[in-house]
Length: 330
Image (cartoon, rainbow, N blue to C red; front, side):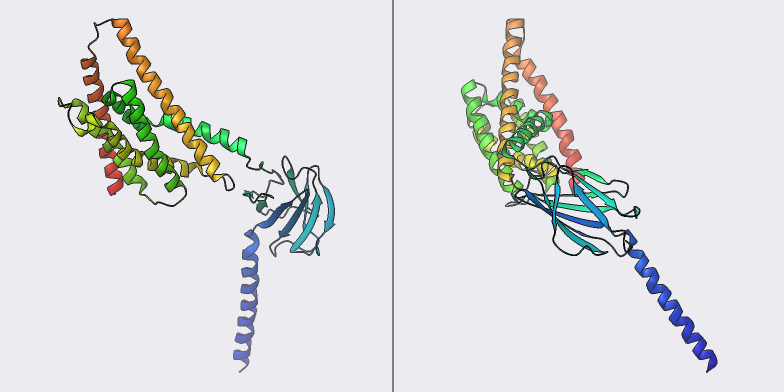
């Protein structure tokens, strides 16, 4: 009996120690700070994990803002306050200090601006200041995504090769304009559908088909026949494959992300940027052809140049196709 009681007491002590250890295991939980912009006022609520001892709660402030009034009790584990910030949160810095010592906690910050936009950040334990990002405004979003669109088309070598193939097949400036319009209309449609999650696609499959579209154009250019549907109606080929290229543009845009409150603006100006880059590319190719004709004055065989370009384009695209097909299958 005595042995049984001793064993029971030991187990109880062990259980209490286990519970204490389990409580200590939550020490890695972060301090959570939620900030809401309400006109010229800012509401701040915070919640600290149990590892923050009594009297060592966080002290939160903003650069250029004045404490207005507390909303509720400032307990050991949570608190809420109002600040007066003329002009809102733009350009402000959040500062977090502890009353006694830094408990080495990460901080999860979530900001909700008045327009509905949200922003989040995770601050490491040694960071006690954080610059609040600016609100997403029309002008800044439009400029940024326009530049991203131009950069993407000029760095997208597969899209560039496809456009060069279309230019060669279209031939005259009028047909090039009509063909480019068909390509634009098609890829604009899928950019919006895929980016807004109205259409879901497999990115590896899309990338594989994009490479295949270049192989297809190279094969059409290399063939001696000029009476095929591709040569007679290049706008159909541009429109059909343009749908796939648009999905490729959208997948690249998904890696960058869209702003929460200006999605349509971002999509529109990304697309305009793509078109601006496309127009520049067409102008450069046509200018290059004109310049070569002027420099060599008939001594340059455009057929030989076209043949060399075609085989180089087809070879590169075939390599991309096999590489992407292998990746997609695996």
